[in-house]
Image 1 (cartoon, one colour):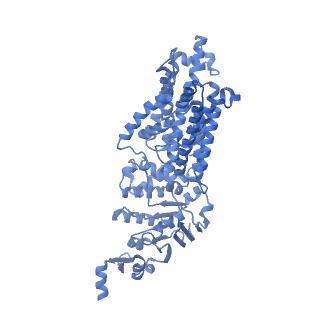
Image 2 (spheres, rainbow over the protein chains, first blue to last red):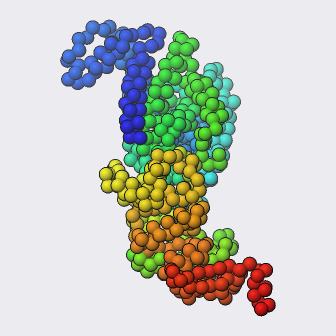
Image 3 (cartoon, chains in turn orange, purple):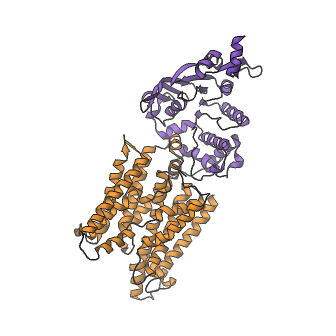
Amino acid sequence: MNKKFMFFSLILFFVLIVSMTFAVMVGSVSVTPLYVWKVILSKIPFIQNLIEQDWSRSQEIIIWQIRAPRVLLAAIVGAGLAIAGAAIQALVRNSIADPYILGISSGAAVGATSVIILGAFSFLGIYALSVSAFLGSLLAIMLVFFLSRVGGRVSIFRLLLAGMAVSFILTAVSNFILMMSKQEGALKAVMFWMLGSLAGAKWNNIMIPAVIFFVVFVLLWLNYRNLNLLLMGEEAAVTLGVNLQQFRVQLILLVSLLTGVLVAVSGSIGFVGLIIPHIVRLIMGSNYKYVIPISALIGGIFLVWADAFARIIIAPQEMPIGIITAFCGGPFFIWLLRRNNYSFGEGD
Amino acid sequence: MSLEAKQVSFSIYDQRILHEVSIHIKEKQFVGLIGPNGSGKSTLLKNMYRLLKPESGTVLLNEKDILKQSSKLIAKNLAVVSQETPVLFDFTVHDLVSMGRTPHKKLLELDQEQDFEIVKDALQQTGISHLAKRSFSSLSGGEKKRVMVARALAQQAQVLILDEPTNHLDIQHQLQLMDLIQTLHLTVVAALHDLNIAAMYCDQLYVLQHGRIVCHGTPEEVLTPALLKEVFGVFADIHTHALTGKPYLTYIPDQFAKKVSQV
């Protein structure tokens, strides 16, 4: 299994790099892969002296200022949502769960709607949308978390039900704000945000998601043994030395933090967190030692391509990326559903 | 290392399941817990491995309260083979047995050569080496049981709690498993349904009825026709087996029991 894992991760890493290069190349102005790498390498200290600057200023802006941060963000968001989904599925021992099941996206939507329509947090300038979306998701997850506690313990059933209830209420709040709005185009702006977009990516706003993703990824991977035991059930976890209550709380915090930060910069992109872990389990089995890293790689690759399509499919306009992920993800999920030898977990 | 339950009581909703139950398993003793369905055997064991928290009373592992020790420390010393084997996701047998190494592993630590050896031994001892690469969900009930035993062995704990370990096993594997556990010289407490197996392997037996210990002692002391009628509601002939020297039970169906009483 270790050899298979090494083989797959190397291949996938290579595919990810090629996909990202390709995604930087395509768009209204196309550039060659040679220039893509020349420009990128020219930004790295020491190496930059070895590279001859033979590209135009506009090429540099397109590659370095516009496309590179966006493609990088696509990879981070895809990888992040995929590992968040894998972790949530272990937490609730059910593979129909995705990172938004705890109400995070509906909370973020309230934050985003109040910025777009009500002009809240205007003093924060260009950060207003991300900050308020993050605050919204934080508020939602705190509410869900406290509702799910009974006698000091987190009940997984209540967690799921509270997530649904809070989602309903918060969705109603953002819909209410939308309906009361008289602004032209507000509906479209909000809709665009809700369906997800990576158009806002800049070097200065992808740093936080990048760091948080890295930290959460490392922590989840290090905890692969505990995640496996969580998947096995309460009895196995308790008898093999997992402090179940403590670990569940830690997991909820990690996943919420990561998902909240990602939603804040990209809107709520659906299907990635749900489907990528399934694909990974299909190839690698359920061992989280392999599920976490491979999910991150496949999630990253998937979203880089989805974003590339979102940019070119109806150019010069942009398609919300959520439409693309749903179009690819839905049929795949149906195919998975019809396979007899694939187990979805509890209740299957 | 010893294991002890002191005056443990437990209720589910308002239903009292255990009434101040005390049992004591001394170092390297093999103790059997017997009793009819619903007498509270599993509930008692679950209280002893911390899945349930006693309403009152304490459980002591190595003479220390288990609720005051870290989960990890307990798991290093106490392994459990429970009745349930609810694996819904796809793990290989080898992956599953390796999970027994979890309590011995630090956060950053990878599996070492030593861990692979321990897992290999556990697979061998339970006779499932040939299944190592199979998917757990594709196994039969008996094979699954042996995997769970192998996982507990890989844990290398001093104390073993077994909840009906011979359930689902054919007779050969029942004896093999009990022989194996006996040769490990651990502190063992096992809930058992088969009284002949209990008599053959246990040093001490505790009898549970309606959540109370009604009797305890050596198999010879505990297994009497009167107790079997009283607790299990069956007639039985009890002999000492010529070869094993252990009590041997023959159950007598009611129709014959009537004839016996007439004569």
